[in-house]
Length: 364
Ligand SMILES: [Zn+2]
Image (tube, rainbow, N blue to C red):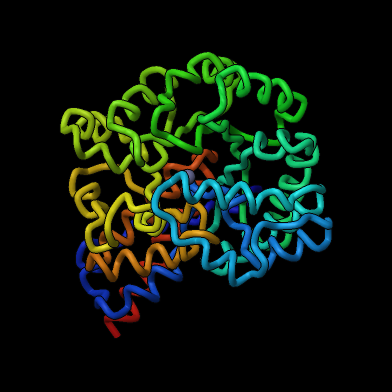
């Protein structure tokens, strides 16, 4: 005899959502289960950890102190950030270093009620310094497995190719990764966008598709909407990372909405890298109003001023977003993840329970 499956919790009704007062939104944003789908693990390296690893490994840094490194994080654009980002990553040498970096992040993710994360990593940043691919992926994977066991956080890895390097370099990286195929679920494309269109990586993405890997790519952050289109048509990605510049092309917006293509939007990152002057001018509300499948994420939280819940809290405050937006964003994040439908349904069930509990408490 099998135990009866409990009936799923229905989605909160519009009346229930309306019953939750605006002052409860910050607590709701913290408590709701969510997935993080756009997080570069090297971008979660806090200055304190960078200095501790530099000491452990005898690496000298171009910054005299933690404070000096923090002060250098006043970026003018994507490239000024990447220069510091690569300096920070230079302290990572051993499997333990990669494990420790990922573990620091995963503990914070659990505190933010992240139930699932798809972690980006940049192997070329490390293999170019002589760190073997195997060291990188084994360190990260052991932290992901430990998170599932000890924190109840599900974590998977997505390997990103650096787009300022060549398509051939990306192909060689894929060759190096193949013996570890079972340790990652997909590939992405990141680093400097301008001047590096998706077409450069058509061949390597075609190989990845044949291998059954999930495909994502950064597009339409600093680059034009045409890069979003070619990421979809040439690379055939399933999600667009950032994608905020899609609004410049109404036909593209209609297509993204019709096909339900998820966008992994990162508001604090966009402000820090001057894509928008401040959060009040961010186009998240317009993206939601256009019916796009938007998710909220932290990108490189150690450098951009906050982890995922900080992104939610600051964005909701600046744009005066409501309870419906909170539910939509959290639900989108769970549905846009690369896990089984059964797993998604279980998390959506938890999400529905949290919102119904807030509505119930507000009614009392
Ligand atoms: Zn990113």
